[in-house]
Image (cartoon, rainbow, N blue to C red; front, top):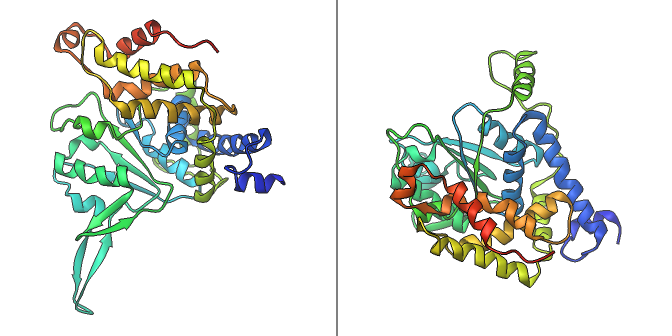
Length: 335
């Protein structure tokens, strides 16, 4: 089987060369995205892990750190469609999904599709919209379909929601319910860039660009949406030992019994840990999951699925500290 056929049918050709071709493809996408998104390698990797695992990403961070640029860059690199929704208190569910309208020209009802009909959807400041509008995304995220006037419409694949929250401003916001949070495969925190990265950003944007906007012309399309579907299929072929399934379940169950945790993670977290670990392995060019892969992705998988008791919150204990303690104390299998 030649290289092209190996990549076109990764589920049929589970050879080292096939996994290398898949790894090279995703690294090509990564390199294109990093041309525009500087100093945020961890968030870029988590976004690509979410894409490879066919999941959704919740990002917490202050405005102006490149979240929109991240989504646009990935969309450009994979030749996919991109849409952005700015969530506001007056945003209606139909503003997300679309609605039916009466066309007087031919006296018939037609469907106007909303921005959710895309490949990559940026839901900016999702917690600024009321629960009813937030809930309009649940069917989209879970079923990858939208129902308008009782008729379901399938979305094109791949499809990923990247939602953002501003952790500093709570006035005028609506907390995401746990059922909605659980739909996000990963939770990432985007931090301020270091001095060297910020200097590179300033130079890149101020040289040859009008205003403070930054275009993505330098990003090349190195993959297609069909390529992403093949990569997602290849992720499912990454090997996981039975001992790692048991380790994953022990970690998640520990969150339900840990002192100071008010609400632990559910079975969806166990599934997410394995899916994300597999995607991380493909991103790195491996063929099988190790305990370290699960440990590395665990914080991003569990952070938004755990609620601390009021006592710990008053003491200023962070969820990440609790997760670190769990990873330290739950015994991992030997490699």
